[in-house]
Image 1: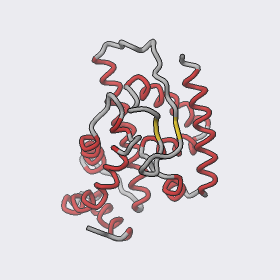
Image 2: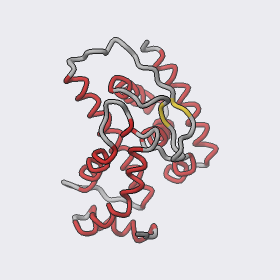
Image 3: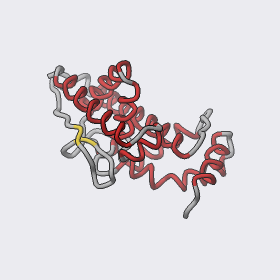
Length: 199
């Protein structure tokens, strides 16, 4: 099933206005991309203690279309909002997992390496995935990064949590590929230093 960006924007806007049929049709069109974002080789759905990609996609859908859904100016805006929702769901799940363990393991720090590229064009963690402790620590560090450089934090969110390519991120934030590459390198260096300080 194919649709152009204009038709998808219309469906998204109708869905956000409460048209359940339009929301369902929009979801059919974006499902494959959301699934790739959630479960690519480095997506958050691959993390050790987190949700299965399919469950994560359905939670993202619930967050975006149930209750009082927002409105999206276009497809790019939708995926930016979806990336933020994905990050929130994965980190909340990680925090809940840690709470169930009664804080066990908080004294250890799992290594994290934000690396270039994956088979889906995105980026992520080396190894099989991040555990709950590392996800929570990464999210906390990203909150600090957002205070220093909101754009760099956004680039990390879109590249790491959503697995988007440099070009996709550039389109979403309205900057050049070169600017995104620079933000990505700078943010990774800052996060490695910040997370290294925790050890």
